[in-house]
Length: 159
Image (cartoon, rainbow, N blue to C red; front, side, top):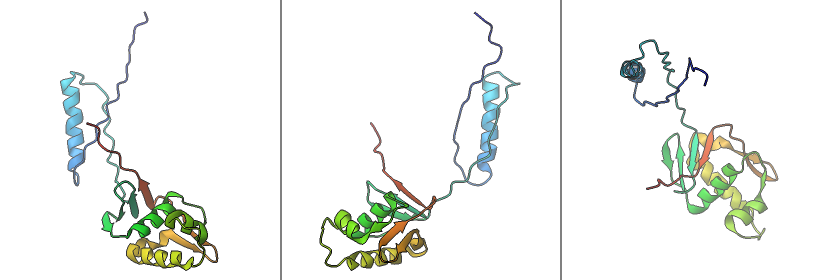
């Protein structure tokens, strides 16, 4: 059996803290690992912290909540369903009649302006984040959200 001279073991530990304390804590943790393993020459790399950026809009599908920069936005059932449908299917033009069928569950095209009214109300409630919904004149709506909107399903914790 050949002799192994160099083995790489990677340990990833995530530390959350505020300010520069996290960098100090990571350095102390790396030194403690070197000492505990009795490997004074071990190459322990401490990567700088990565800033987490809160998306403009976060849609939590399972709990039916919308957060704008972390702050809850109160929407009616239909407003949530409409926003969720648009954001879960980005980069597509959604015709008003198709939205009526999908979100409202009706094929009636008597008054597709109902969609416009709901989009207007959603935009008002979203404030600065309203720009994620684009009007395609004479057709419908589209959401183009390069990272500004996150749609997530919440997974229950297994016990």
